[in-house]
Image 1 (tube, rainbow, N blue to C red):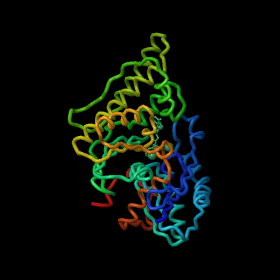
Image 2: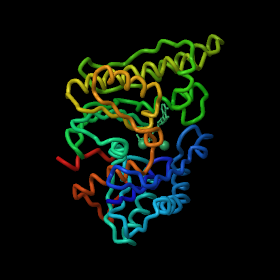
Image 3: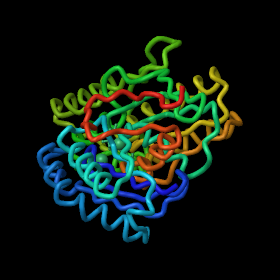
Image 4: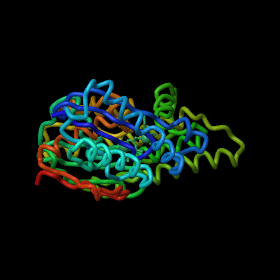
Length: 336
Ligand code: ATP
Ligand code: MG
Ligand code: FE
């Protein structure tokens, strides 16, 4: 099965060809980070404009690198949501045109299902599986009892982990996106500021990062008031340790409770070295296999959309030309 995946939910324009849901044949990502940097975050209008400029080139490049003809494809899969509606629509309309022109099935894919299925490109997923999804807009624990089946067991009540990273970076005058830089500073730091851990109720798998974010902002504000200069490395290290400790502990508790065969991490923040190391060490010790995709597959890409789309294709899921961008789309199971 050859699937063309298309992704344009935020600030990456991406297309990819994936074989059998497991093997990347081509994976093209055009990032817009440079254009959004000076605004300190993604500007929706600018994102849409870039997608329009890039989408055709990116799709053609993905087909060319895969050395594949449209007629050899089995379906075209595209991110349906969540994301910026104007950005989503560019990928969706390109996918519709492509599917119509070449007589291919069209399948709308949930962006977070994509992040999770990035793992299928690395190793076969075994169920029941626990996925820690940590990205720019999501922080959740998802239990998968089988392929294409999702149960949300915990989620953030306020900021997503990536959002907290980006906001803390702003406080430290680090350009967007701040995650990778904070990660680096934390690793090079020789000390750390003590920030709170937010656990919520003892049995809850939910997360909350806005209090931690405020603690960092207050710390900076108080230092400014006293005319003191903060050490950004110590702040980065203190912030990262708080995030990593809570994410790791809750993931471990859930993995035990649901007796899973595998734990996986997914989404942009799973590119974080501190988090990867902590999860790897924790689950090594616990004796539960833990996997996380290579960095390129943690952040937004279209191979992950094609991978999730392949599972949907096999389950008989199809969209029609009424497919629309859905900013608040919920993650629904396609195998029940
Ligand atoms: P979503 O997937 O929830 O719709 P998104 O697609 O914008 O949101 P991703 O592309 O999956 O998010 O991830 C981007 C986020 O990952 C940004 O917030 C960025 O700061 C964060 N990130 C990337 N690398 C790292 C890192 N090394 N450490 C921490 N955060 C990181
Ligand atoms: Mg992005
Ligand atoms: Fe994403």
